[in-house]
Image 1 (cartoon, rainbow, N blue to C red):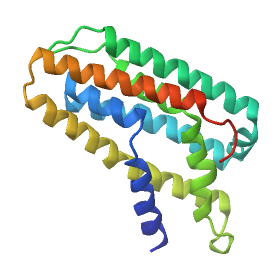
Image 2 (image 1 turned 45 degrees about the horizontal axis):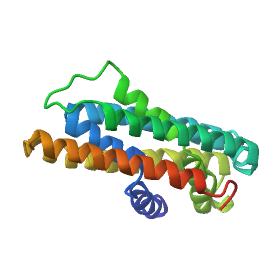
Image 3 (image 1 turned 135 degrees about the horizontal axis):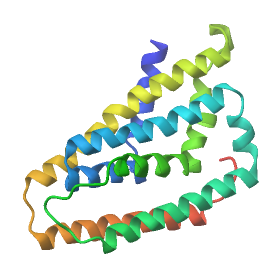
Image 4 (image 1 turned 120 degrees about the horizontal axis):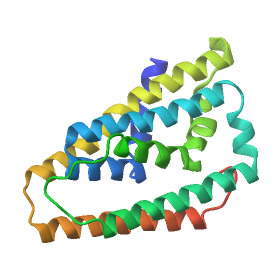
Length: 201
């Protein structure tokens, strides 16, 4: 029952609109759902690194370090702005072949440079740890795996939405407007991240 309750909560968190979910949809629209699902591995890899850091006891240290969070934050701002620029200025085509590993790398870098993601594993996940159930580190590792399991269908759902849009066979103008909307959202997320407070929430 306990892991099931956490899984449900994790799915809700994973479905929250964010840069990675937006990227997943964008990749499916332009490159197909298979590429988007493959790129999801990059996001999960970034999350796995953060989970390992938390289990090793490094997560809380990073989360408590204003300097570390500030560096991560501004790297995230810069990368989101870069992605927005790419979306704005890359010509729109019906079929485009991404460079090998490029969508996966975008998902990974977007996740690993997002301090809010780090806080998920240092503030949200530990709330479900109960010392009465055994070793806290083992519980964190198990909950981390459950979170990855919850993130997978959420990411697949975004890829499915992108696949539906792709099958709609939009006109070049409509696809361009969709890209402009995506770029605007990414730039807006960069702005929100830039103006957000650094530190624990």
